[in-house]
Structures are given as structure tokens and as C-alpha cells.
Amino acid sequence: MDSVEQLAQRGGPDLTVRRPGPVRHFDRLSQRIVQLKRERNAVILAHNYQVPEIQDVADYVGDSLGLSQQAAQTEAEIIVFCGVHFMAETAKIINPGKKVVLPDLDAGCSLEQSCPSDRLRKFQADRPGLYTIAYINCSAQVKALSDVICTSGNAQRIVEAAPENQDILFVPDENLGAWVTEQTGRPMVLWPGNCYAHVEFTRDSILKIRSSFPQAPVVAHPECTKSVRLLADEICSTEKMIGYCRNSSDRAFIIATESGILHRLKKECPDKEFIPAPTDTCRCNECKYMKRNTLSKLHDCLDSLGPEIQLEPELIERARLPIDRMLRLSA
Ligand code: 13P
Ligand code: SF4
Image (tube, rainbow, N blue to C red; front, side):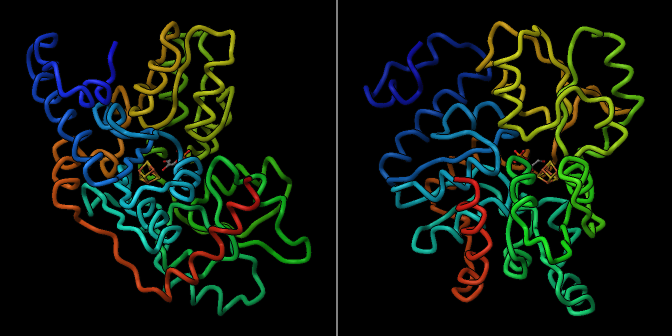
């Protein structure tokens, strides 16, 4: 089938002929977005949790590590970041000379909120000498106070590369931090923060879905609690989930992360079945922040080139050091 991009390049035909109902609106809007993107010399980067129609118009869809690497490589003048605020901030820090826009400026993250920079600064002052590793899910100010950044895709590698003679402070995800300690054997001081969405998965909710699909391995994100991680067959970042499911000989998988990833999984592995892991109260799990971005807001953002991420040059300069260190260690 022609991609939206191919159709837009040819200037037609109208996709509405093939698709009835509400999808009709999305098709026209998608075409317009692709046109605007070209006119503006923009690149659309989207996280794996974005709604399907945004993923389908994006130039790149991936996890936090892949998105940072793409941001570091792009030659486009404008970066339209379809994800949450800290991800767009990271793209701006990597590209201070480019305009970085985000469809909804209120797309936050509970992990970022759990670690205000003034509290971190005070903690570091009270316990000098700590080597601070910050999960990328934090503000630019917290990044500026850190020695190195990590993502769920490279956390093990980053912790293994930390100086052996220094104690490590890991912020702001206690679950990811605990999992990395289990993997590396390296003890760390853990900041008490978590992802409000991933901690909704429970031992009971996973046991229940597993009893309905006993042949399906459980694939979980490391932001899940230990009681869930103990039930998982594989624990990894969202991008590594795609590779794991693609390469596995299993035909069905229980996916314990934000349900937006199912679109990508179904696209990449059309012959396999993906079952969203439920919480105790809902049959799947969505991040209310990731879902603030919509196709219509993406269109308006490309049209007006706003809202824009703006950061002080001194902050960018300081926050860039630990990001660059991460990118070097992940190359
Ligand atoms: P990934 O880097 O694994 O995609 O995770 C990002 C995130 O926000 C998970 O909740
Ligand atoms: Fe933050 Fe959790 Fe949403 Fe990821 S899923 S952006 S960690 S609140």
C-alpha cells in the first residue's frame, strides 16, 4: 500500500475513497501534516507510546535512546517531538541551534515530577562525592546536576562504566535503578520516584492474564515493580521489546508497558499476537501524558511552529555534558 508520504508527494489521490467513517478525517490531516513537514524542513520524531496515527506520519518511531540518537543526527531545521516534555527538552539540548516543538507542552512525566532539581541539589550537598546517574526521564535542570544520563535501553552499560571508587546516586526511578542493581551487582542509592503508569501493573493482574494465555511469554518494562519483574520472561526498553518479539519463535506475547507500543509491534510482527497486560482496574495501561499529543495538535504545531521548547544557553551547556557522555558510551 502507498504510504501517506508517497501519496502526499504525488499530490493525491484522496485517501478518503478507500476508508469510510472517522478515519477519513485522519487521512486528510495526515496528508496535510506530511506536506507541512516538507515545507518547513521538519523531522517528526515519535515515541513508541504515541497514538497510531502519529506513529504513522513520523519519520522515526522509537525509544528514548533511539530518539536521542536521531535528534543528534538530524539535518532538519525543525524537530517536531511527539513524546513528552523531557524528551523534547533533550532534543533541544542536543540541538541548541534548532527549533524544537512539542504538540502539547503539558505532556509531562511522573518521574520527572518526582525529582525537583532543588531537592536533588540539596541531597548532593548533604552527601558530597556521589556519582549521579540520571534516567533520561528528568528535567533539564536535573540533567545539569548529573554526571551521566541513561535510558532503559543502556542503563546497564552506563552503570557498568561508572567509576568504581565512587558511590552511585541513581535518580529518579527506584524500579529501574533496582533492576539495574540486580543485573550489574552494583549497589546504588535510589531516589524514591516511579512511573505512575507502570506501577499500576501488579503481581495479581499479571498472574491473571498469564493464566488466560499460558503459552505467551511476559515482556515487561524495567519501570515495573519487582513483583511484576519477577514474573517476566524478558525485561527491556520499548525498542528492545520489538526486537525480542520479532526474533522469538513464540507466537503470542503479554506486553507489560504502555499500550501504545502495540501498534508498532503489530506493524513489525503482523503474524504474531500481542496481549496488553492489564492493571487491577483496566484491561490495558495508557500514559495520560503521552496521550496528550493528538494528530490535530501535531498539525497545529507544524502549522504555527509552536509551542516551542526554550532553555537558557547556560543550562543547555551544562545539561549537554552528561547527555554527550551517554551518547558516547552507547555508540
Ligand atoms: P523507553 O526508553 O524504554 O521507550 O521508555 C520511555 C518511557 O517513558 C517509559 O515509560
Ligand atoms: Fe513518564 Fe511513565 Fe509516562 Fe513514561 S509512561 S512518560 S515514565 S509517566
